[in-house]
Image (tube, rainbow, N blue to C red; front, side, top):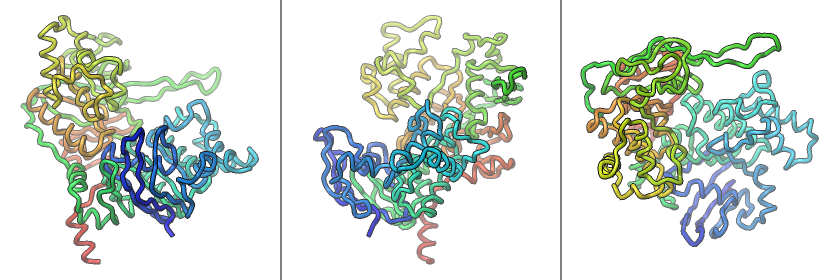
Length: 537
């Protein structure tokens, strides 16, 4: 008998169909991946399984967990099932954890709610769980708070909470989306080892087909609330039958066509930049220490060049980016844009800084939801000495919205009326509207579906052709960096450990750290190779 069996599950919310006749099963010790674009029904299937549905939702069909009908359970009964029989690992660990409670208390909470256990015994159990997920006691005491941990470490705490009572089924909803490649590889190995050790079933929700190919025993492809294709991973990827599955696969391997790099002309020069952070005192009368986030970094970005910056979380990428934008004081070195210093003494020179714009990872979080698009994308106008008004302003708005693939009529809409990919197009329009000399893309596509990501990357290539863009592209997704950059910098421990032409660095890396990054990145297999291996077997 299957551990989990879902048969013809349909779900509607306020009479709007969300899921239609979804059927799938999970065996003990099996990893099943739910994949598809945003809005395909992946997360709603998991929420229906957990019975964490909004008001006015109606469900039909069957969900059985180890022979128990989930749809027949009361809320009180589901409270005993959640955490005990079904564990959940959420996409964003910082929002899944309570910022005012220690990690020890949060892991203990799951145990104390579901089992009669003395606090001292629960504390020991929590300590063992954190050790088990790679957070040893000497470095990660139970008294730590979530903000004191990195993203990967916080995700390990969430996993410890989810497996605290050895659940029969574990659901992981995009558990590695925001993580760098080495941390992602560690989390995936951890999940796989836990499934094997505890003989759990794992439902993994992700839009990353490379992760699916590496992790899953079976794949369930969803589109618009329906299952369009399912099967064992190797067989499905080798013989994709549905056009939607083939579209997802092609989008995952998408390569853009960048225009040629113009003749060298220095635009951004970073020379021996140093940035230190003061650490708290460890003893009363001792001097506070310092952490060097950026250590003697130098590089030059040519006008019209597309430069990538990669490295693990905490390597100094974000600090360096803020320093370039004039948002972080530097203790040494200099940063020049078109020959002019970004800093005047220790303060940024606003006449120089206004020539740079940035596109952030989360487009929704970077916009004020109360303002219309026309106001949002014209925010950079305040940097200009003379702001466009009247028809000139309207023409500039229409030009930018058209340039990023939207309609001029979208200027009167609000940001909540757009999809994630459309919001990122609006963010790019805002960055472009004053024609800056340099744009910094900070993880600008990491939160997007593979098909939407491919569209945004094609848009960048088109804009490079039309506007001679110069940009610094910061990302942990090596496949994206490889596609949209001419040259790449590899950063580790605050230093640039390797740099060169993108294809050369990726094809023939010289530094051991670069080799480890490339080795850790999941790779989408070639369908022809899979077919040959299946036929050989």
